[in-house]
Image 1 (tube, rainbow, N blue to C red):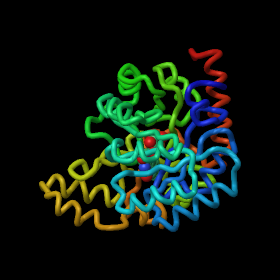
Image 2 (image 1 turned 135 degrees about the horizontal axis):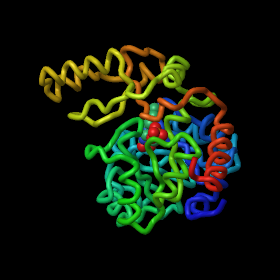
Image 3 (image 1 turned 30 degrees about the vertical axis):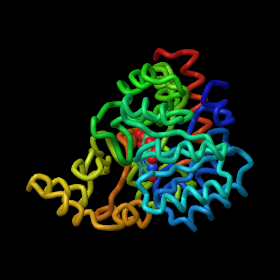
Length: 312
Ligand SMILES: Cc1cc2nc3c(=O)[nH]c(=O)nc-3n(C[C@H](O)[C@H](O)[C@H](O)COP(=O)(O)O)c2cc1C
């Protein structure tokens, strides 16, 4: 398959595995890249030396292109950028910050830069900043989310009409049919997060993977809107936040409740009640944990079959 996204990244299928804290290290990223998609290391949960180690191990595990996801508000961002340049990472996906800050410097080093957006206004800013493509991430998505709560179904066509650069759809995509729907709406590729959490190679704790595949429709909700909105699985921590918000908690009180290391506690260390569990609405249709290569292959096969016979 050849289109603007496969050509931009030099990959076989326009299927991108999302960069995800506590889930996407070198094992997952290299498995997806070896399977013909684009694997991405999630730098947001890594200290600089850990990021370097993951990049080096990923380079040793695949000859194919791979990328690093970089939340721009990360405190060690300068060191992360330095390491990405030194290690000659070919592709960087930036998120949560201003694309103007780093895009030109990265592109000067020959790095392909993609920025994650939640609105057509931000997509236009990313294009103006010189980004090669945007990820348009809808309200359904796992992890941090836009304040405007625009769903993927609405966001993709609006972003596609706002920009000329390739658009990669994210949020609520775990199957080939969902991939086809996003492409019919105008996307050039898909970024898939939650489905890859339930993969053999994801570094997420087994308790979390098991909870993801057991979860049902309605089990996730956007939370912590006064801080940075994030879609979470409902558990004791989520209920505590709800209760605090109902009692008109201040930002300081919410920050205190969140504390440090909640995401690690839940998704990496396996505390399913006190941890912060980031996952998308699409977890409701993810029913098994599989090797990443099978996920890529099945998604592409279902996409191809659905393309031939789109209506059920
Ligand atoms: C566990 C988890 C961690 C995530 N961490 C990040 C991150 O560090 N940086 C980022 O840009 N997006 C992050 N996201 C969002 C994903 O990159 C992706 O856009 C999203 O998962 C797509 O929606 P889906 O979950 O419905 O597939 C995360 C998502 C999940 C589920």
